[in-house]
Length: 114
Length: 111
Image 1: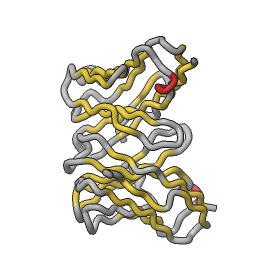
Image 2: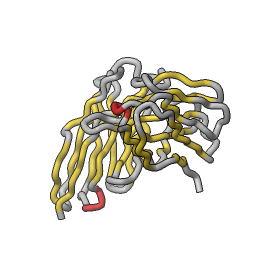
Image 3: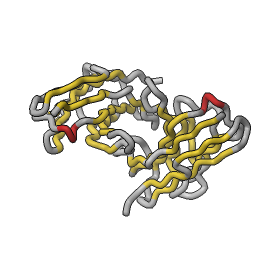
């Protein structure tokens, strides 16, 4: 089944404790992206990747890191999480190296930073 | 940051009625406009991606139009059903490899 898989789905953690949210897709998509969803705000793009070893900042990259060592994986890293990073996070992927194709979203990861 | 506006923010529709809502985006450097359907407790699902001025797309009772010169897209739901209750998101890209989403149109269909 074609899908984007995020782990974990839910996480409660404390300020400053490094965490990684994994994202994997099995559709051989080139473009991958991370978004966060906060009440009253639309989905905001954190980072995106056009292909292996090619990543770039979205609109809200502060406090996050990503890597794209393999085509299928695009982990989101919070080196020193803070409470303002409490949010619902989505990973998405699409065909082609740009966002002109439909995005396939994972099920989301709800992070709570205490 | 690209400004994508959706209106109205929320609307209630009687079952069987038709409705529509608007997505406004920058009219310069247009590349693509996306529409997604997002049900509560699920992830957004793609409805349409439109790239040409005048594009019209249809999926069942849902259709969309695109005007890139004036920077807007309409989404229409014909004969609304309770299962159409969701938030509808539009997203815009100007070819800079980023995707900017609006805040969504929340639709509640009243049986």
